[in-house]
Image 1 (tube, rainbow, N blue to C red):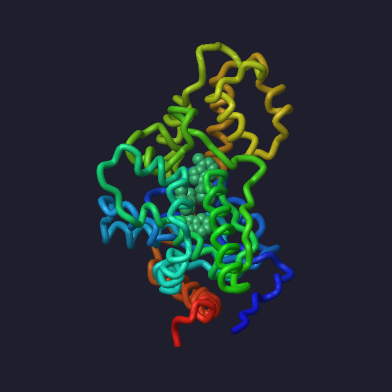
Image 2 (image 1 turned 45 degrees about the vertical axis):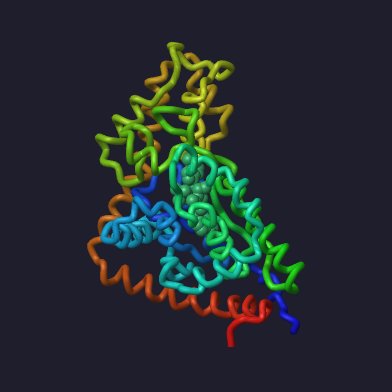
Length: 340
Ligand code: AMP
Ligand code: TRP
């Protein structure tokens, strides 16, 4: 039986997602969300809240909290400017085709490919027992992407390896079972693709560290007081004033944040702060962050105040996503000889 892959549409087909683990941070915004919003007129896009991925750390499952966070992360997508009329926004578990496709792809993915993933290595390191889902996590992510004939996956730098694996999984499947999947590519932003921790600029800003260490991350929903504390106590170095030739990783991170938020060219920022104390740089970062997150926080509060409306938007999103996912899944099953 021949299976045909649809032609690439005029507007690139885009899919991305985030885990509803906890409050989102500035790295999520600059690395991913902001580019989702910026290009929403030029693309045919779907964005999901990947709640099934949270189950890969079973110790952390809290049913009530997970349901709440899935809704909250969707609300944050909208608060950051994603328009539900121009994009399909949904919760991954509301579209059962993701889990089904994931199994089919699990069977065609070599185990060695999964052991090589750096996220698996770092998350399983030093732990006595890890769930199988932590290893097969990228296969579910591949299903998320491949189900929608995705051309582009806008993500932060840390996800590039997973998108490349998705491409490998699709290429292998197409070779073994005939042309079925469109090959996606990762798209990372030019500024802000990797924001580092404020308390430790040698590690990327991450939700899991934020949960343990106040002062690590800049939360998009942090109060003005918390923002001030986090940014003004960011780690820099023992120099007294800024010199671009000697900028330490902490100072570089502050510059990158400022550049990403203000779109001012880096040489101009460096010239402006040359010879000035780090306090001035931090104040400028605080101001730029506050200007960005204040309206987001206000819109978020308004959206969370109307859960029925939020649920209605997500139900519409899931129905629209399902229609597309079902068509692709039918192709995959036909290629494998399963299903009716
Ligand atoms: P996660 O927080 O792992 O669910 O990531 C959601 C999205 O945010 C993905 O596209 C990541 O690549 C991106 N992201 C996460 N942390 C950072 C960071 N520190 N800097 C830039 N992008 C990030
Ligand atoms: N693994 C991604 C992260 O941790 C989240 C994710 C799941 C995703 N499915 C996806 C991102 C599909 C892009 C496309 O950030």
